[in-house]
Image (cartoon, rainbow, N blue to C red; front, side, top):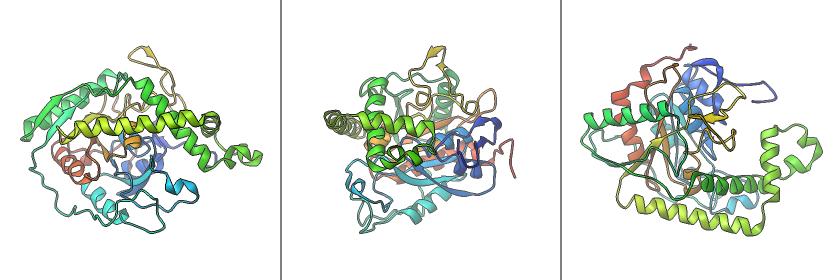
Length: 344
């Protein structure tokens, strides 16, 4: 929701949410208004709306895009947020990513220096060794979402020379991962812009969602933040060890399809969720904490014709292989030819 102009609806079903926070960007591409759009991703905000709206989106490696930010947040060694492309075609994301990437002396402290992306020619025949995990931790994923993602992976296996192994990606429980992310996310947000809730004039204007998050972050202790940083280091190490054996990790992007605006699911597969505002996306924010590149590609729509996304995660600084396999999926799934119900 936006208090200025209201909700942004899903072009596949105007009763449903577009996802966020880059919902407008995803809708503009999905509905055919634009071919290229830019989003921001601090917990999944490129991949969530791209998945819900049936388009392609990629969150690059932490530091790939040197953003100019003010204050002490510039020196944060764990910057969970980055900009990135949302497009219909993978090739367009590669082009925009090249344009956005680069180093600035005024940019964030954690920046990939002097390493350009050579994305002009993607190798559509490259062989990958893939780890497939139907969940992260013990996160509950809707059965149809899980099935359609697995079906897409099986189709990929039939069409390309590859190795695919199903694994249990379980650094710890999904609740523990969420708790670390939420404490870190909210505390970093409040520390960056405390005036949004501390100034009464601002507090009256911000959404209840932001207010809830910042109020939570204001209460998190220093020792808890120290614990968060230690856990983030562990999450990065866990993923690095996985990539010593595999080229890429594939999971579902979301736990559900798009839901009615302002009505996040209270249950998934009949099981009551802990936090309705976050439990539909338990598979995205882990990679904001680790900083790895992660993309979402559309697979077969659900039985009620809502898009479903498959998430591709790569090693640090290896957007090339993420884009590469994304292009391979595009060649066999042909999502770029599908038109949303509301299109121009």
